[in-house]
Image (cartoon, helix red, strand yellow):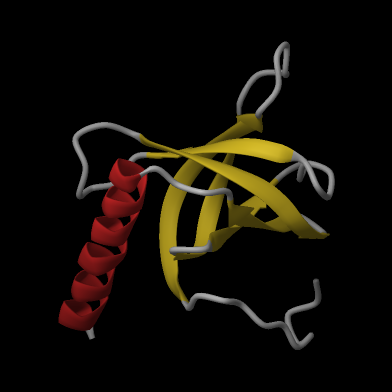
Length: 116
């Protein structure tokens, strides 16, 4: 999706710089790939990488949040692909996944405001 294209989301996203790993959510899927989160919200994320997955692919997104003891593993589906960037919408999250994601966003927002 071009950066100047209008788009609408159900939930707001905030800029974030965080390493992420992702893999297809299917039996026998290839190995994980690495990328960088560009933005993140309760409903989804934007990721930069070398080779984006195909549109519609079901993924497992794994990120290590500074606010969590364990890596956060989130189910997602690819909603758009543009160049070396793609966007995902999270599939329904469990209460612990949603709480950990909310805490990551809260801590990230606080750190950004403190650095401003």
